[in-house]
Image (cartoon, rainbow, N blue to C red; front, side):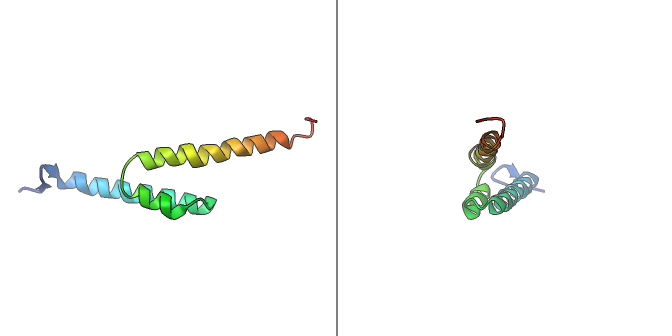
Amino acid sequence: MNTSIQGVPLWLLLLLAVVLLTQGTLIFTDARRRQINPWFWGIWGLFQVPMPTIFYILFVKWKQAREAKEEHTNDDPRID
């Protein structure tokens, strides 16, 4: 039984679809919670793997964590 499309097995296509849907959904929900362009991140996450996740971590999560750390440092009462 030939269950492939131009040499790509059907199971691999289904796995790729599941990974893309999961990635897009997770990025969308996190971006919506942070109110940072959720539709952009979610749609981009549906088209390719793993670059949207890597860029999201670098440009959104890492940046917000760094800014939160700086705010926490600036709020320290020991620093005048």
